[in-house]
Length: 114
Image 1 (cartoon, rainbow, N blue to C red):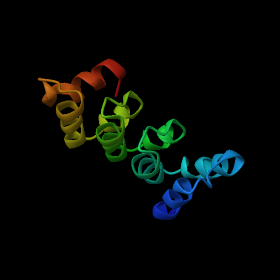
Image 2: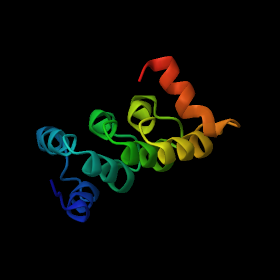
Image 3: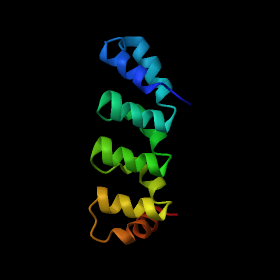
């Protein structure tokens, strides 16, 4: 799905995204991980809870959302992150600041199954 992020950003800045129109547009954005991430980062400049389930399905978008939007851990996305060696290391090191970042994936999978 492609949504024109600059266009959505301009609508938001001009105040057109209000009420039911905003809800309909956000519902559509929330179905796509990349769009949800970009909407949170570029338009809202804040978390986008409605889009978090879509974001959490992907290791890369979960990492970027945690790093660039939340600037904090993103527990909902940790399952996806833990499926990949490199994203796991990056997340544990950059987001969790875990001194044992190389073993975070193994510990996560042992605790949560997988």
